[in-house]
Image 1 (cartoon, rainbow, N blue to C red):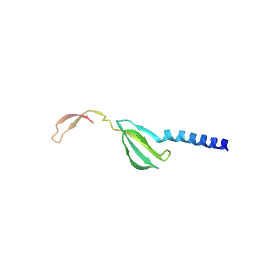
Image 2 (cartoon, one colour):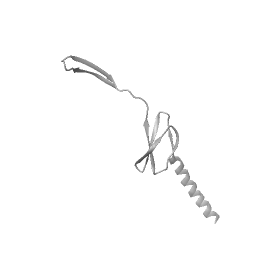
Image 3 (cartoon, rainbow, N blue to C red):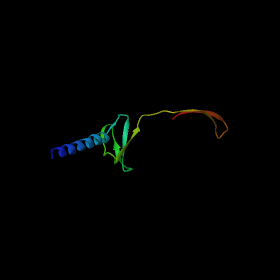
Image 4 (tube, rainbow, N blue to C red):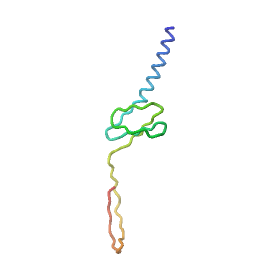
Length: 90
């Protein structure tokens, strides 16, 4: 009887040790987590330590930092046929 109990406890410990790391997600300060449960949107998670249901929930991280993209200078012609150079930053 004691051997069977030890086997059951060992199996339970192995299952627990695999599920706990799968349930913990760490989101950095500059990111937000979007949680999907079976493909359906559930909600947003803020920065810090977050818990999800393993193998059912999925978390995608979205970067919230500002990124700039330089658009090369382009020449355009206005309605009164004047050539103008346009430079932009997106």
